[in-house]
Amino acid sequence: MRAVVYDEAFKVTVREVDRPKILHPDDVIVKVTTTCICGSDLHILGIVDELGPGVTLLKKGDRVVMPFNVACGRCTNCEEGRTAFCTLVNPGRRRLWVRSAGCSKIHADALRDTSRWVPTLADKLFAEYLRVPFADFNALVLPAGTAHEEDFVTLADIFPTGWHGVELSGFRPGDSIAIFGAGPVGLLAAYSAVLRGASEVYVVDRIPERLARVQDIGCTPINYTKGDAVDQILELRGGKEVDRGVDAVGYQATAADGKTEVLNSVIESLVRVVRATGGLGIQGVYLPADPGAPDSAASKGYMSFPFGKLFEKGLSIGTGQCNVKMYNRYLRDLIVSGRAKPSFVVSHNVSLDEAPNAYDKFDRRVDGYTKVLLHP
Ligand code: NAD
Image 1 (tube, rainbow, N blue to C red):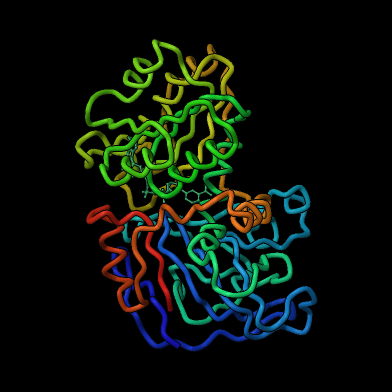
Image 2 (spheres, helix red, strand yellow):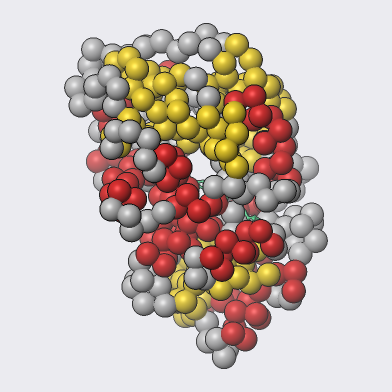
């Protein structure tokens, strides 16, 4: 079968590779119909093609979507819905995040049993077939057919992740919220806030195409090349801070020039813009350590922000990877009922062969590349 294979940082190629095999009784093989390039990992939607003998809830031909972070469904964290912190597939929470193609990619090398993990960019990222571990738990069954294909693929990561960012901030209906980053995650955090009854949603970025999408969903775009984002939001609100804030940027935050790295700036801004006793949802990824970075606090996974101000304001912080399984059934039903259409973030649909070029464009955020779907 054909697959996009990770060669080295900033280099992927399309090659012939072996078709995956069932390795555990609870695995299934899925024929991938749609997958997409993400700021952090793999999203997959496809049709169940082959089942291990221990799979009881799925059948051949089921249309399914899988979370980017596969989980066992039975450890203590999974039992509490915190599937991103599954202790079985991810013992000790040790993962190596590498910079590649401009995105953070999760390596499976720290896992004791990598066969329990969906392949990542380091293996065979986008392929015609994919083996899914703990399939009864991880594969969410979708309505048959091809309707909502572009919406459903967002259930693998960015829609639940955006929703989770809002959740982590302690959001309640009627709250105002500021979201930093208008990438796919930030846009879907803004969209989630709208769906959940936000009174005001401000979204900060510097890329015009992305800010235009902010406006399309009824939120207020804030272009931080035109002045300090917090000052702009406060000015629009007559000096009043917002109730909640979301970081959908992470460690790759840049200054207004789009180049200079400003690791701490988004959290600093959130501490300034959120009202006392409000909440911050940190969905952007921060690295525990970045082996590729020059020797610095950031390379050790340290960062500094005004903790004293956070304490003075009594702010709460929620953070961590999205527990996709906690939300994706409800979000699927919002899509089916027509109440949610998260595919507005999709900018390009390409074939597997076009993946290297699409990666490059997405990495440089040029030509309007926001969310790229691949169709193997
Ligand atoms: P993206 O890179 O496409 O979007 C980030 C956006 O932030 C860009 O549009 C960029 O212009 C903007 N930006 C950069 N610096 C900024 C600043 N100083 N102020 C405001 N905006 C700024 O990425 P994405 O796919 O939307 O993902 C966003 C973050 O979420 C990434 O860190 C990604 O790794 C992370 N993520 C987390 C999870 C999770 O489970 N927590 C899941 C998926 C993605």
